[in-house]
Length: 343
Image 1 (spheres, rainbow, N blue to C red):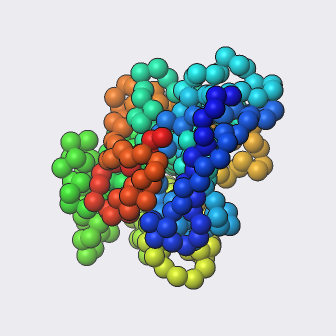
Image 2 (cartoon, rainbow, N blue to C red):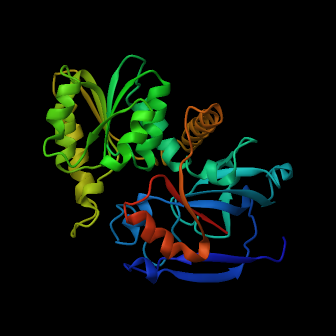
């Protein structure tokens, strides 16, 4: 093991971004079946914004190191791991712990990044790309010729989702703020201003018979509107509750309400389907299947980036020591693309 220092960003409690702390220690060793990744890029996602408010529904107790995903080079391998992995660029989904110069993960959770993709390009589509591809193809099973509605089409998941949906041959309607509309039109997406007083009416004008799928990260009232916009046989995939980011009270309740609604809607005899998507669902039941799906989906997203079907959008790139500034920037709502942290 080289004599580098481990540098971590610690979230000590419910604090402003400036309350993040920097911690240094010795670089950890890889245990059996593990690898040490020297981080090259990690990202600021909506999850970290929720976590610093204590609002992410299954976050660990404070203090902890945030960071949902990372890309980096394998620095060391533990017993039982192919030593030829050393030096290879990999990506990993970890939920917490990625805002660090070095991260230990199970080797089975690492996905090889293909040659030709930079670390920052790959980082923009790890959690966002896996989420987008799984809700599009594993949950909604969108096909060519269908019409889909993507809420937050200018956001992290939404921007990848609209590109994957267009690549699949779907007609795409995307809600976003006006500053994203021109970029969406360039992607052949029909933009709708999410601040319009009556988004459902505007969507019905564009799709009188309803849409075949809705992807909703907003939660709250939006989920109900999304359900009513479905065509017969259509599918709603709810995958967040962004509208409750600054709400006080139980952090589980917004998710429980969505789960209850999707269960109820699925009992109705109208042929429509509703899902609440959790990227970690199934891991506890079948870890091998979970890993196989994740690897297959992320590998396909990387291939889509290389083909040009998906453009990696990097909003800003800051060093790990400026994580507070990066978090503040991501929360500002003024940037397009992913805010990336580097060592």
